[in-house]
Amino acid sequence: AQSVTQLDSHVSVSEGTPVLLRCNYSSSYSPSLFWYVQHPNKGLQLLLKYTSAATLVKGINGFEAEFKKSETSFHLTKPSAHMSDAAEYFCVVTQRKKAAGNKLTFGGGTRVLVKP
Amino acid sequence: DVKVTQSSRYLVKRTGEKVFLECVQDMDHENMFWYRQDPGLGLRLIYFSYDVKMKEKGDIPEGYSVSREKKERFSLILESASTNQTSMYLCASSPNFGLNVVAFFGQGTRLTVV
Image (cartoon, rainbow over all chains, first blue to last red; front, side, top):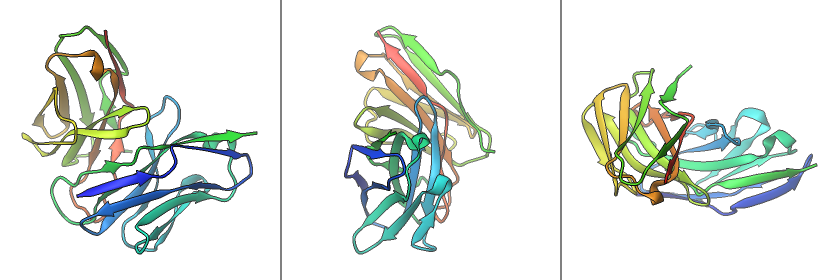
């Protein structure tokens, strides 16, 4: 079994300030973890993924996330928010094993508002 | 680039109608998924398929069925549409092996049942 909890449903930041989106997961197997972003009226786009290599993962648009097994967390950060970062962000977990039908489980999403 | 194509961006259907949502992927992926997205609830898995003619229930399968007759196509069927099925529906596909799986999503179908 697996589950994902995004701890904040909304985050509001000023342009140029850091962004932190929190994600905790549970998984019966070693997990693969992802962050996806969805801009208004757009499809889901992969930001970054963790699949067992380096625990600090760099993604697109200056985002990065750190896998912490002891805390079962995969928080997403960006040092300096840009207006174009306003979107909804989803933390996603799946099982990191060869198997048919690996399911993706989504968190509830965090909506980011960036103030000028 | 991987492409996941959903047949409609917007649909309006009447209560009780049978509704078909179609999804096609062009990367020979084994897995295909149907999710619905509702504000505050994130994406919830309805059904998924890991091979032709194979299907498994997700977290909210009630009121839905699926069909996968060909590897590239995965259909979601609302047997008798109801107003509580008004939602955004997202299709996804992914390769089978769990070591480096990334899922690709379609643009979504916004279904309104009146």
